[in-house]
Length: 150
Image 1 (cartoon, rainbow, N blue to C red):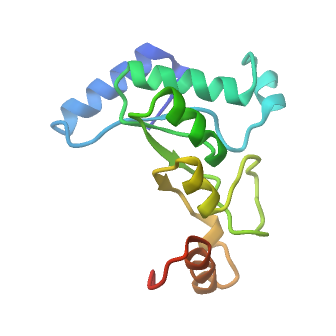
Image 2: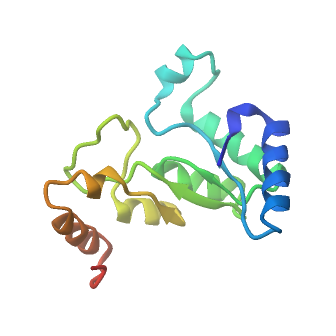
């Protein structure tokens, strides 16, 4: 994982280094914009434009650097797929309906994320921090129309 804000040279070096170290068996993921940030936060750290514009820029950078994919908020997956359909889209910020969002500002349910084009979902605190993690997995199954995850 490499943060796209490091620029194209950083991302290209990470992609090349990982490919060499793993004999091509692993691919780099580029962080677009942390899900704990919103437009105001970006402005505070001196980044121009909106979160959406930043995600699009980072997706294009990732594609040019031949990264395997990007990490972005769930609702941004559709935009990434529109500008760089070859990229794998990994989405943190996954929360069960009505659950605490913690420090995350751009969140979605698992089903919403998949509908938006996410390929992989990252769920940490939504399950591990739940009062009843088994029940949380049951809610996940229900949201996705699955059964038998546990």
